[in-house]
Length: 370
Image 1 (cartoon, one colour):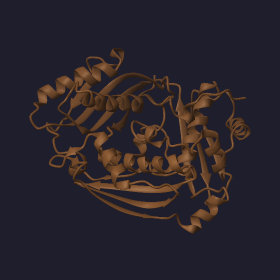
Image 2 (cartoon, one colour):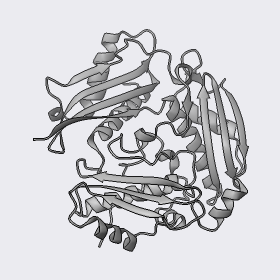
Image 3 (cartoon, helix red, strand yellow):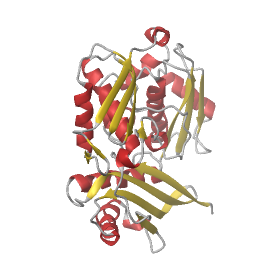
Image 4 (cartoon, helix red, strand yellow):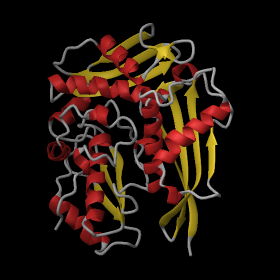
């Protein structure tokens, strides 16, 4: 019997890195609402009560970035510069230029906007074909935001993190070994009340009872206090939560971030396409788990390589599955964009709680493969 433990992390939408991601994706979506062919590569940096936005945008869209950024920060819930950030008083610096003509030349011809490697993954261990640990971590971090916004635990603040350790037996999740939740809160709350409320309203609501036992360890704010948070407690930067965004470390990652990039950047579009393909290989019964890698060269349309690994669970050989992929899918940048509808303003839906495993995203659709 093979037994091991695996841990994945998720963060709330108020985590400084996720605040940065959401600002970048909000700018991208606003551009795409007005200009489907907008080229966007935007980075956001937050520190203290200051937001810095930089990058390249080539578009006909016109909008007030300052107003959009403040609206986004308000929606997350940051309104107190003494403990995190205030959408009303924060300073916003913007440094936006146009896309390099050298890069645009290759993209205009339908080629990839950069070189790089991308991965996609799927497994049958959960209903949405995601690894169990990251799937549960996302559910818990999303619930943290929900109980704050609905006033169920009214003293919570936007910043927070979750870690879930899962015990696997013979490659299947057997039980949860550890749940760690660190959540920002108002100063006048006791550790005892916080722990009780989080266990009762977050953990017990989201975690199936059969996955916990008397040996499951639960930690809530193990330092005992988390009042100073958000950009005041830690800087945030777009693209710094790539493992949270994908498979929680259970599958490999090519290194490219997603948020703030339009779909001509294969870092984003190819990662979405490969998730779609891997999920459908598993959903169609060709394997129990599947990881796919492709590589691209800047300005070139076709991928340089395609690699697949089914970890010994495949009903077809890896060579046959690569041929299946080539037969069913166009992996050129424009082919992926058209197939998945990636010129639509859908990207703020992806920013928080993972880019994969959500029913309302086009790359999660299950199709018939043959």
